[in-house]
Length: 304
Length: 304
Image 1 (cartoon, rainbow over the protein chains, first blue to last red):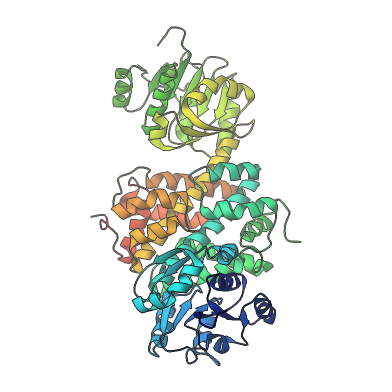
Image 2 (cartoon, rainbow over the protein chains, first blue to last red):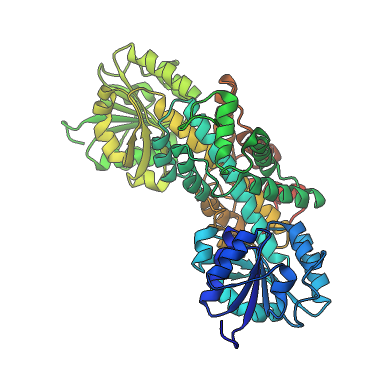
């Protein structure tokens, strides 16, 4: 990294964060990265990044801090917990928060950070690990003009599609939650339908062919049901992600006295799948849960 | 119609059946049509078809009888009720049944008809009125080789996509029910998500733009949510269609001791929408139901 390079930090070098850190480096930024897993940090350093011992060390001197942790609790800890980075970030720098969170929590964290003279960009992501590595993510962003301006070089490096969804933190999160509501329901519905089709004795490959060409199709049906056809539940995205995200939907909806019965039914199926020991398996495991409960055969059989 | 033309009958000249009858005529078949609505029959005759007083008159001498009625009860009445056509159909002719039905009912009706020496093709359709008129339907067919052979000229005239899904009646119906399970859940989920998005204060046009480009998309979200954006609930497909079809799913599933909680939640929302007086309105009215119950504003307001 050149002495003059804009400095960025990436907190969390998991499957998404690692690729995003590499995209930032490819765009010419100087990137420090940290993770609770020292192997990820060592690998990042070996490939030319700067490994940091923790969030505060990574954030020191960074104009842009990209947080790619799992949830609201981790995001709050990164900012304001023991060794939190809020105090270590330079004045005028921006915190780009990518975790999927309740918009109300986002607003609270953003207000607390902005009081200290740093900017907060609400920037949940979608697209998966490969698009993260290619700098081809979709980012659902909202925040002040100053936050967008400060984050711009990182956004340009990481995103193929950047939605600018409002001038306050929380709006990006709200759009993301609407997407997650639909995505979660569609995985549960696809699983219910495929297991029910198997119970009818239908050829599931034919079901996939017909449905993906019909009005019953969804992005998730098309993307996830090949895992069921192949009997392959190695996690591309885990069941517990939707236990979390549909759980946030329930929290938001209950707080607003807004009934969401379809999302509630879907959440119960993810919970049941997690309770049956498949929380860390691919989220298409919901289909296996239906099959196991009903004694219906699916390709690849049940779970061991 | 030429004296030598293959003769067909269409039972039910509604928005789908009328277009299908015209597609058959365009392909050179001699077509007799009937309907409970005499205006539809008069219009068909005025446009060059042969109007018939009832199903038996239409079916007399027809090599192919296409039944485009609403449900299983009407289909059974057409075949075996007072003035039913089973006895009027020529030996070796084929009954092409397009209504969406429980596969178990289809198997029963087919067995009863086939005992008499006529063929039964299980042939649920999808695609809407315009594609019906253009001969561009999707048909999910199953039946004996003899049934397919006898029906072929009509299938060629009516379908852009013909799925041949098995050698016994009931298999086409089962594929159709899997599609309807998904389609119904997706409409209910889209409605839940759009109303919930409105409750978050999001710009719904922006929500439509983001979701249709994201992993939360479904064919139904993309097709139906413009009705919500426009506040236009004139029925393209009515709420009560999914009260019926998700009801069939519940009947099938309960008979098979197969839990379908996501489809069950969706059915309750269609029922609630119908109970609130919107059964004959567009099925995107489920979004209006959520909005009305929660006091959330949607474009075009509530139901006046």
